[in-house]
Length: 195
Image (tube, rainbow, N blue to C red; front, side, top):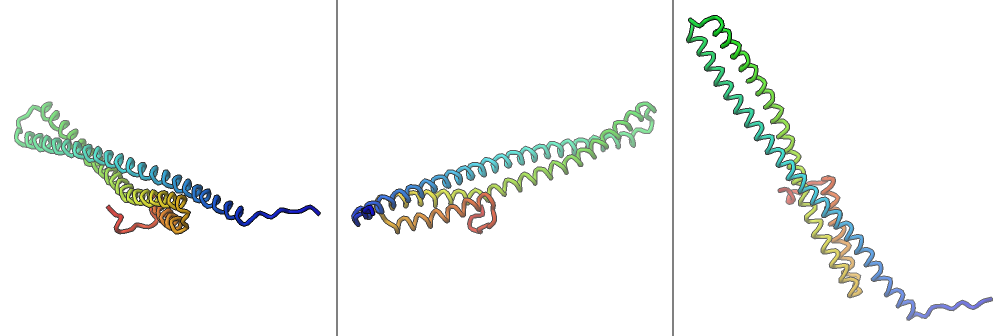
């Protein structure tokens, strides 16, 4: 029967000592990946929030333009109506021209009112979208902070061979991961994170 050589206790301790930094380094790499994803989510939320704000502002400017045009047409309609009432002695072709102009202005005024409603709905929808992304952003910001702390704590754990520092890193990373996931999914709305 061949002889099996058992490792010495010192060698086992050395192998064990080398495996701790490797495991912590691997965990640190995972923290860094989650941090990168969280950062990407935060950037995306910020960009979408700004885009929705810009589009909402554009829609409100368009709404105002339609509103101004509607008021102009309303004033023109009033003037045309008064001119028709005031001038009984108009030639039939002039009266007909006034009446045609009045019909066109009345139709345009109605069209502007309908268009304004659609524009207002779109602007309000964009504002809701902006608010949604604004409410997601703080979760990503705090997640990034907690994940950065986790990376620092795991680095300390490697240097000091400290399981306590590793435990703190795991807790910080766990909270950061939950906040990042909530930033994407918005399952829970924490009141102190609301802008």
